[in-house]
Amino acid sequence: MKKLLILLSFFVMISAASGCSQIAAPSPTLAPTPSNTPAPTATDTPAPTVTPTPLPSPTDTPAPTATNTLIPFPGFSQLFEFNKAWIADNQTHFYFLNSQVNMNLYGIIAGEHPFSCSPDPKYPNHMECLADFTDWKKSYLEFVFYADEARTQEVDRRTFFTGLSDEARGIPEGCEAEFRIYDGKCYVAYTCYDQYGNYLYSFNNYPPGGVFQGFTGRCPGW
Image (cartoon, rainbow, N blue to C red; front, side, top):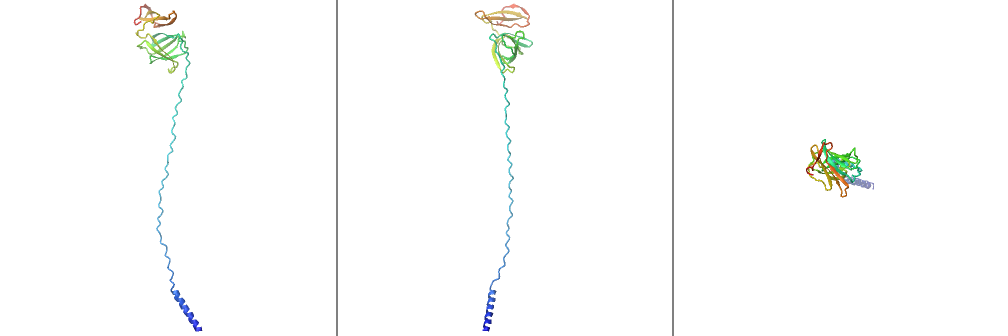
């Protein structure tokens, strides 16, 4: 019995040794293969574009328009009339009766020649106007009167016969005329009345300061 147990133990040991010899040894673990991971590519990020901020456009503010202040003008009297014209000292003198305007006036004659007027110092109800132009070709001239020196405020416009040229006119009907010689030249004066004999107006072109040489017949052109 004892020998049988020994044999069994022997066989068990041999079987165990034989079983162990058949177990495969563990395979070695391979080191991981390194992967070539590409380095991150640098991305060119464009710099932010500077957007110019437009400056505010300057606004043209118009200059304030000067407002002309109207000059009070009383108007000429109903008896206002042209009396005479003469040339002296390189100026043409125009004399008006019964203007009754106590102020200086300015004007344009024949659409282009400036003149200025002021009350007669001796007879303030009358008015004398002066123009630097003397080469008149016509006797019928338009006078435009202005209250301001800039000639923007027109106050009156009339046409008068001045007698400054040889342009014929004749004596108006109902007028009494006389003709005189001054410094060798013939001049005329006439006075007009209405149908009742009331005075209307008068005209003369006698030269102030001229030397009177007597009366004569009708002047040429009259």
